[in-house]
Length: 230
Image 1: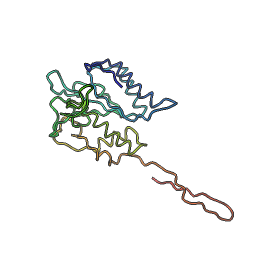
Image 2: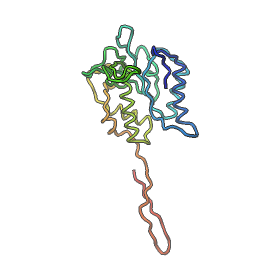
Image 3: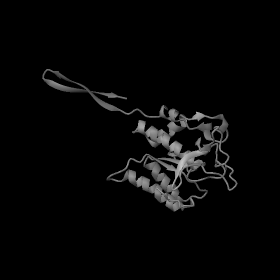
Image 4: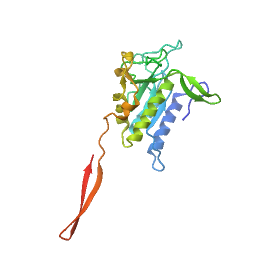
């Protein structure tokens, strides 16, 4: 869902419209789409009630919302999101994951925003190979490159646990993260993304399943015995 122009500029109202579209596709009565997670590789120091309501709608629709923490100031220096909020990453909903960028050494990228209480996790975001229209494969850096790693892990977890809630998958990603001491004081819990950790986290509620065991006939009466497994 595109709302940015060729200069990576766009209106927050258009961003909210794109977010609302994901909720509409998931919740409509006919031909609903199984939208479980959205990647939001954009950020702004400005916000609005419209954006707040759109992300709240995703929360109500049980859609995980993964957001880039932001790429610092005009000098390329990371900003503390605890002091200067960036949106939508700083919105405090139970479905939002705020993502910073690390380099090849696992250190916080110099340009990456951070926040000991407001940025949830870090993922690779320096010299990431991706595609660009008309240019083929290129290397890019930014929290916009780190965020899709978290979104991709969320998709893996939803695939393994299709009945999981957005909150459960969020908890799995955060509790399954690697504790990276290089991120102490910069990222909540000093967390670095760990796909295996997320897939093996114990944050998922058991799902009951009715299993017919056998049919028993006694004195002309047929009874069906059902067990419930978890």
